[in-house]
Image (cartoon, rainbow over all chains, first blue to last red; front, side):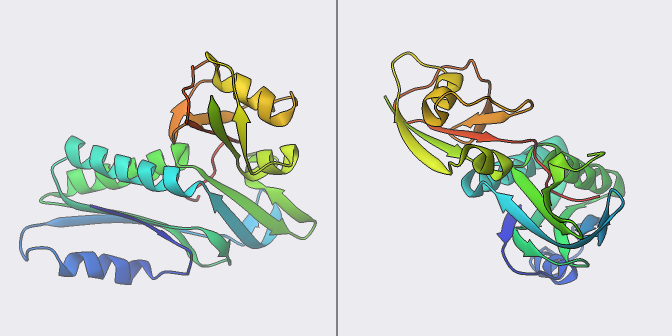
Length: 143
Length: 79
């Protein structure tokens, strides 16, 4: 299991291929993945760019923890999280979660668990630049 | 007790603090470190906190050498 924090843009498909290249051929029958990408709109406003702040040591520790939880809860062959931080442009991937297992149910459930836990608790904070200036996403109307 | 206190995102902007070391009495709670570090500024609603990078509560006791963090609701991932 792997949890990575990246300051530069990443290609989720290359990340998946890299993990798959290290797996025993024929051992897994399923890979479920989720890719979250930056939108150019939020709560009715055009968003030009985003800055993603995090608490580095706690974030790494938290992502490692939820990977370990997913691995103990489902029968997984491997799982992966990649998450950006820093300056992000619309269209760039922000997050990738993935899980490999013998059958699809475990892969789907674990992949969803990783993204939902990450979104609810991982210490990241988004600041958007809109037509009217900067704002923290947790302060945006409707958030 | 020497306590390292960190502030993130909007809380860092509001308090004007990123990281500060405070000298706290023993015993003391997480909330006590907020008061010491910020000069008793009002804490925004929904403020979250951590002790040594693990989520905690404001009334949890702290120990010498702890790292306390205060931050707003998290907004990682996407969509």
